[in-house]
Length: 436
Ligand code: ADP
Ligand code: ZN
Image 1: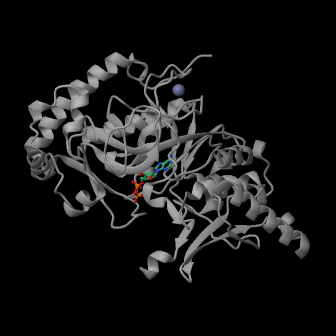
Image 2 (image 1 turned 90 degrees about the vertical axis):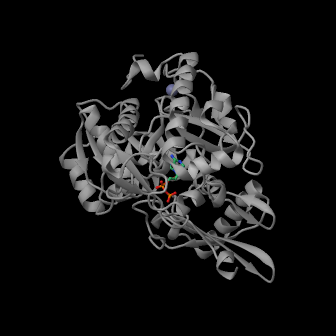
Image 3 (image 1 turned 30 degrees about the vertical axis):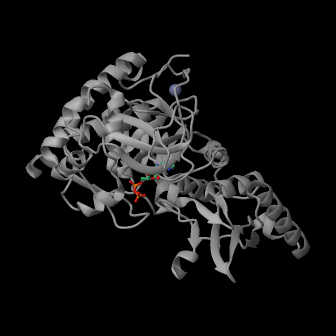
């Protein structure tokens, strides 16, 4: 099988060479940040570490971490490492977990980011012959602009749809014969559902691949989307703080996302102690931007939990792979003392034959945590008798109990009663936080 790469030499560089490249870039970057970002210089001074102490990659452990709290404290321009007149763009986080954070880019930073997205598109089979429909949001959110830029670099015909207006998405998809679609996995599921409602079969569209990210999604969800759209679904990961989508991307192997190691140095740490963990251990992902100019974060704590693997990949890429992030450390709910991730519940629901339309509600009643899961029925399932539905609820509760070890209350609800997502889906309501 022949493999396609956007930047073959870099993407298939032998591991020792990548390390050497990273080391060289790291030394330069630490010096750049120390000289131009007083906030980080103070953090380094407090730790008693100077740029010249960073000689090899392992020395990175001497550097202080940066977290979202630091970014909020230095809002808006406290992390700026070049004159503002050198910047050409601002983007911002979605604000999923609180006040938005902004990021700034020089033209060099934009090029680098778009190249990362181009690598993802080519890895998903994209060429200049393709029609790439970008239905991530455009604007401050990085999803739309990132994939749009990547698609331009590949030379594909780019449809800058942005998110929403699903009827128009479908009309353009059919009329213009889109071959690659980029959006959140929850929106992809919704588009698949809408196509079916309009009477289209999966083979009626021209799509061959989808590039989905910006939120956690399970393998079960992947299979569901692949079936409903008749495509191969690729994962893509990124965050505004590191530039946007494209920090890591999946190849045809679909076995974890290759991190663009020539631009980002990844570490996995114990979220409690900050200690760096060996390959294969689950922990919090930490990124260092090795060559961004305007907003070069060193050791940024993403709060995303995942595992890295250096196992050889059949695609020929040598970049380390990250497993699907399980969610952020702050997505984890502690319910009656048990750690629960929404993705675990999603896995059970899809395995039991439900569509990925659900809402999780957590509360505390009489000092006991409660877990309520609302799951939408399909029109066929909804036509069952009351007795059948009660039996279904019992079966689903048992399956979730087997997965988590706690008993949920299941509520099977009417078709279309749970709001669909056009961007990042909000699936959890934790009312305990309202009481605090
Ligand atoms: P916000 O932090 O406000 O959501 P971003 O829009 O920058 O801001 O989102 C970045 C976050 O989205 C990541 O830190 C991660 O939690 C999540 N994310 C992005 N891509 C993926 C993916 N492929 N799988 C799981 N989570 C993802
Ligand atoms: Zn690969």
